[in-house]
Structures are given as structure tokens and as C-alpha cells.
Length: 172
Image 1 (cartoon, rainbow, N blue to C red):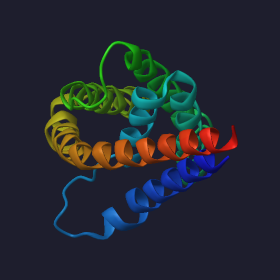
Image 2 (tube, one colour):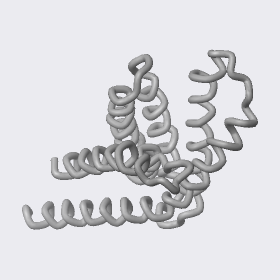
Image 3 (spheres, helix red, strand yellow):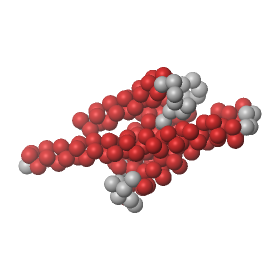
Image 4 (cartoon, rainbow, N blue to C red):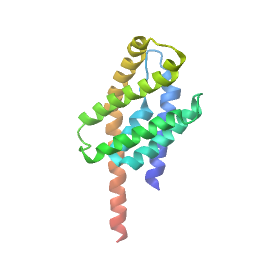
């Protein structure tokens, strides 16, 4: 129960920072997608179910905050949590290479998803402009922030696992 509450607080904190603080910083041309980082980190570290749950909560928050069809972001974030949860059994989570690669692919997939369903549908066909002005800066910034956020989340997850193990051994 404590783990669920801490994870919920992390998602709400990431959502608040992403949507309320980063847009107020004047020198940032793009802001990192903290919810995407948190969702793929949940999936990669904790597995498919935790990644999908985090993706669901992140997507619902995004759907409530932004206009558009409800479920637009939820669908994408749930898929991200599931797909990244598959990698948890193939790679050791201490190495940062796979999380950085996943960060790049997830950010590119997110931005292409946004482009297709919000711009291409409206006949805005200048993909190179969107790539140059939005996708590349946001991807670079998200990957840089992933270096920090992933490590912090990994430390928090390990501490929670350690507390759960200690509690279980104290019970016996």
C-alpha cells in the first residue's frame, strides 16, 4: 500500500512539474516529458503491470488537463508502460544504456503519435518543421533528464523493496 501511495505521489509530482513549472522557465525551448520518463521507468524496473498502471494514471491526468478526445494520452501511455515492461526480464536495470535508448524511442514514438493524430489529420504536413522545432529539442532534453530521474526512481524503488523485505522478515 505504501508503494502505491509513493508511486502515485511521484506521478502527480511529475505531472505538476511538467505542466506547471517547466512552461514558466523562459529559457527552455522544450520541456522534458517527465510522465513519459516515469512511465517507462515504472515499466522497465517494476514490470508490465506497474508500467501499465503508471501509464494509465499519467494518461488520465494528461487527458484531464489537455483538451481533445478522452483516452488519447491514456492509450499511448498504457502501451508505453506495457512495452517497456517487457524489457525488465531482458536487461539489468543498473545499466543506463537501455533506459536511455528506451527514452529516445519512447519520446520519438510519443511525438510522432502527437504529430499524426493532432497535426497530420488537420492537413498540417510540414513534418520537417515539427521535427526540427519540437521533436529534436524535446527528445534531447528528455534524454538528459532521464539520466537524473531514472537514477532517482531506481533508488526510491530499491529503498521501498528493502523496506518491504525487512518488514516481511520482521513478521516471521
